[in-house]
Length: 97
Image (cartoon, rainbow, N blue to C red; front, top):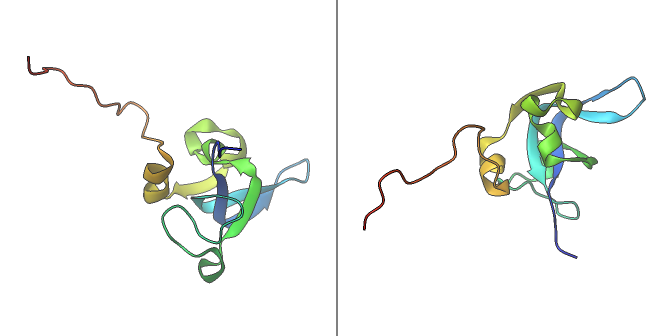
């Protein structure tokens, strides 16, 4: 079974009105079953909390949803997961013949 999308590991947590634990603080991408983020931080040494039920795209503040308390998304994890900043798509404007 191929991996579809990483989950979230974060420096803090908060609980919504339904009692669901959600990420807060600094969010990192993390593959469940591993002990490190995509940027190389060890989860245990960095004291990051795991959120296997929250997908990586839900951690972006512009997505809303589970990202209400996320203050920063790790840029190295964002690059490793393949998610670019919105509006920064690359395209060649004058290709060589």
